[in-house]
Image 1 (cartoon, rainbow, N blue to C red):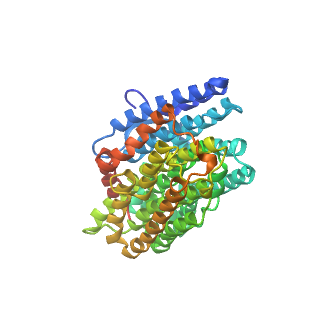
Image 2 (image 1 turned 30 degrees about the vertical axis):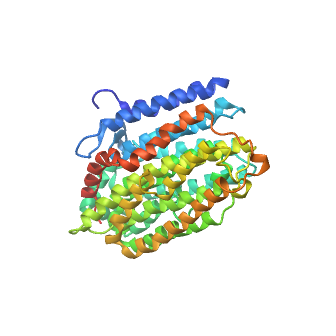
Image 3 (image 1 turned 90 degrees about the vertical axis):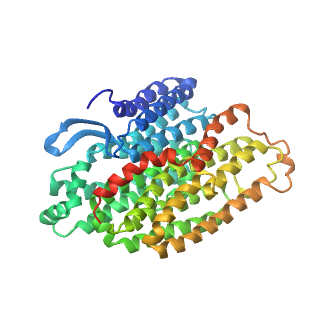
Length: 504
């Protein structure tokens, strides 16, 4: 470790802020905002210090419990650093959106910051034991934020969220314990090197027998719950709907990316060969997630549930890209794999930004309407609140993937890569795009247009503080839609480096 330990400081900062916020009373939100802003600055510093060759940068390593294969090992490449920036942005958005937390604000914002620490740790830890601590740390604050500040059915929703996620964590833990017993290592880098030569599969078979396929199923199940991938998604609509909207922003904007990140950091590098063997059923699940997620969104009348299922649909594209590239790289397949993986990583960031913004708008509408959030509850809002509807419309079209906005680029790259690798899956998945377009247009038609109900004739538009807060988010959506190389130039070397070390 050389110089300032940026990643350690980044992870400790929210913990320190949480302790201060807990005892700050009515000033807790200000403490959380300052802490989250400082975290964003550090995350951007990490983003600018990435190695040009796409390898791990800012590596911090120290012995912890060597006899157990446990060490303090941190690092970030283009994938991890981008998720750090996303987590910092979404946390800052969530805290800004939580303007009306009057009950136990110190505890609320302390839990939000602890959740941020769990996110930062999950995206930087390179030893399984260390990583798993942060993976679980993010679960506990999220559970209490839903349980204590959620809606009328917060109890069942928080319990279902906890049970599903914990079951996935148990599957992950058991699978990785088997890997450790076979290799004596928990280091992601070392295990990836073993997997690239086939030594990992040989070690597992020698110690435990032919169980590698079962191990990969356990690991995939753990990450599938977090994404979520159908049919492991049933906890999501209730959790997203019952959680306070600022908490839902964290769940969809950052926490769901932990599952996709885990697939790219752990599942594919260690068990890419086994995943390639079950590629077809995995592609079927990815396509089902895309298409059924869009159809489920179309059937909803609650805006939060519409956007909850839209998140399932959008993350399905990430699953499609990941599973499609699980083929031996021969000739043109290499370029397709790189395009798909670049698209997946870009989609992770763009979806996190856009989905969090959508739930932010829902929070604003609830504040102005006394808690209303049904599609049929509004109408004609563009007349009394043109700025709110205009900015929300931009975000909706970004979610739809309109060219010129950030949502388009990631989906385009995914389909560009997937069509040569799995054209049937890509073709069927287009149905999800068409259905989701109908969903978005329905929301715009019923909420923004038509006659204005009498009770909404004086519906308040965005005030100056809200416009100022939303301006950089909207600007970033437009900027990345026009200049995606701001991200791709830093991510592509990591993509090339990852593909070079993966074995299918």
